[in-house]
Length: 399
Ligand code: GDP
Ligand code: MN
Image (cartoon, rainbow, N blue to C red; front, side):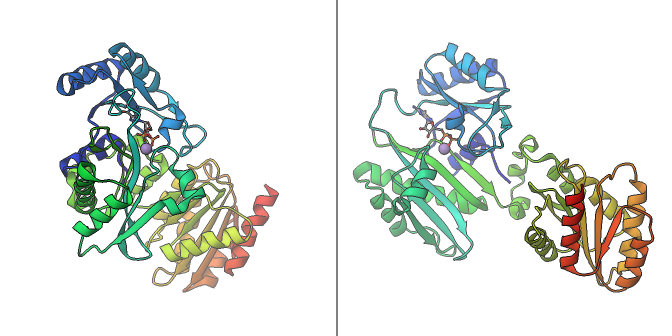
């Protein structure tokens, strides 16, 4: 589960990470109220208004702007709230902005001594450890740094049992060329950041930029957090932070009906049982020159009700031009699955307009093929895996 910047900062602050302070607002009026509150608490007269969407690169897309007065807080918030923010990380349609974060401008206007660093903690799946990535070259161009001068990005594996040691934290501060107070600040910052990542069961905590002010304070200006969904049962308070407006609506609906569905960009809808077979099916579609429209694992019970639910989810994606059903019938016999598919498609006769390629392998697969072939519906049956993918290509070429 991804969080908004303001929520991520709340978590960070709770673990003692120093943050750029701010409040979230859903209207320009509220933004002004929050700016006044911030002024009372911090004395700041300068603010930064930041679009809250689940996508990075907001600065480049015009979603992060400075306000030098309360009037500007109003006008800028008015402009950002409701806009479709297009950034290098969104689709070309962009993301609708529902909320803005009103934060204190921590670059102390005119302060040219502010340094921007990049620091993230993430799960390194290949080493099965946590990893800290950090660089002196933080800020909006970190992607270019990663591409052109990757040697400027340091990585450090952290053994989860040991956690982040003092030595680790010192090494990071040294490599960031810090000394004196700033070095001590960075050591505490990194330790608190790792603690937040670890205790919140996250798979990513990315802070870009972390800044050093001219008076040697180290603080988080941005925060991107991904919490491990499998650990959410331990964090009921984070569950309340979920903003489904930011999620893919078809995926949200699929989750509600208990289907394991991931939306993709292609045009071949896939209905498969078992995650492994689903992955293999997607590979095969690609090899045959197609593009999968989704990953969908219907699980062990492929009865007509479940098959119908799965079809309904698949055809919500308007890009789908053909559907490939690839199901292995072991204990759930193929003939039963075939009857389920036929029943589901009869129920949905007026809704499904695309051809369906059906491959059922396993117990009673011949009987299943007969059921499919004699159904009188818009089906193409296949026995071999490759044959199924090729048939998908053929029907797409004809469409
Ligand atoms: P992102 O573009 O989505 O990563 O959003 P960020 O929160 O990182 O903001 C983009 C950029 O705005 C940062 O890299 C900073 O350079 C700049 N920025 C953020 N907060 C402030 C601030 O308080 N003052 C000033 N002057 N610049 C800021
Ligand atoms: Mn950023």
